[in-house]
Length: 359
Image: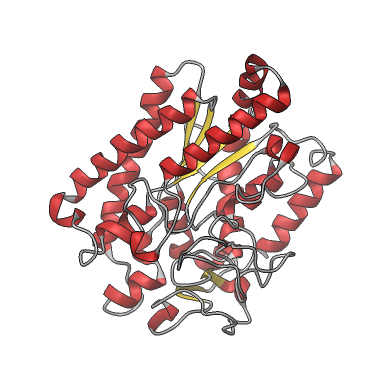
């Protein structure tokens, strides 16, 4: 039902001629496995998804997306009117970069060490360095630094990092010391301080329209439920509370940047709240299974991600989660549409992506 509605919306956009003329000239994406679309495919990493059943419902099959189909940024790209999805940095070439680049890397975090137990990954600072290379190429293509800066100032910059700093760092005490060094409140502050500096670097290299995506409910993922939920249904409050501390500071950071950066606009996307809405009333969103992955291993299909060529559930559009950690395409459609055009006052702050394009 949700997928049909999204398809109709996409058709309407094309019918109105929006797809041929995107609402912004380019869309730059930074993040982790929630939005990675192939940057980890050819590096020495366990965090890869370039094999079936990943991509089972995506037109091009497995691409490196950690989903059965589209990710949230794919949905947003459609709604922004782009003819095609934003290419990964690993393969983006030539004038293709003028419409934007996806720098996201599975297992990446704000902190450099985050996710290191999974092998290679491109942390947020590394992604920013890759973006700097892109900016140099764009200046060369456009031929003038001032014109290039004006061009970049009209683009949307989506940033979604922080999940792995909890999932593959703070709540992995056998691998990382952070939970012994910092209280959850202190850790949120440390993350936001580093995040602030990283965002300032993006600003220094032309970014002006920022979408800062909050962390979802990691404590409700099949992995968290499998490991720490007594009944396999009740979300793990200790993890979710820590996520909320980060999100509260991230939302406050949006206010700080908007006050102090007169020529820039920052918005916050409340992914946590959207997940809460779905979990509270899945039927309202056309879903029926919220506590298990469509594919996976063990309790809640939550022990690990999908194994190569592992059979997946047949009713994929009924699942909130595709695997132990990542939302299904059905969930990504819901979150993407609400990020683009807020359906409740709490979805986006102080406005949504649709209004940001007009700012």
